Image 1: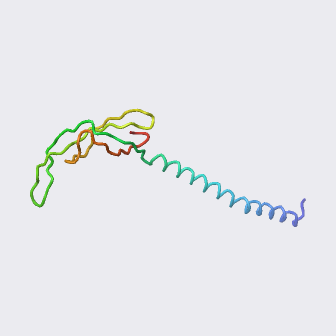
Image 2 (image 1 turned 180 degrees about the vertical axis):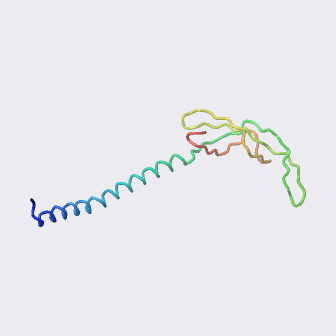
Image 3 (image 1 turned 90 degrees about the horizontal axis):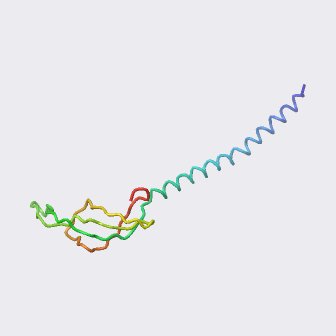
Length: 115
């Protein structure tokens, strides 16, 4: 049988060990969470490329000026750009505007996993 005094010493050492280890464990978990968040946010950041309007589908855009629509011609551009791997991507923009013209260069942003 171990005297009571020695039992308390062992218990005290165990508590001190846990108190000393807890901050290290907390910091380790915090570092892991921060690393996961940084990695996730970097993946969600869009990539950028330079695109070129390869064709314009002209549409009549009802752009309201005051109370009346103007019925101006606007370009719905087909844009081509190259992603970092060298693959060429072509898409039809969802935007129309009278200021777009075939051959214009414009910045393109895309998701790494879905250009």
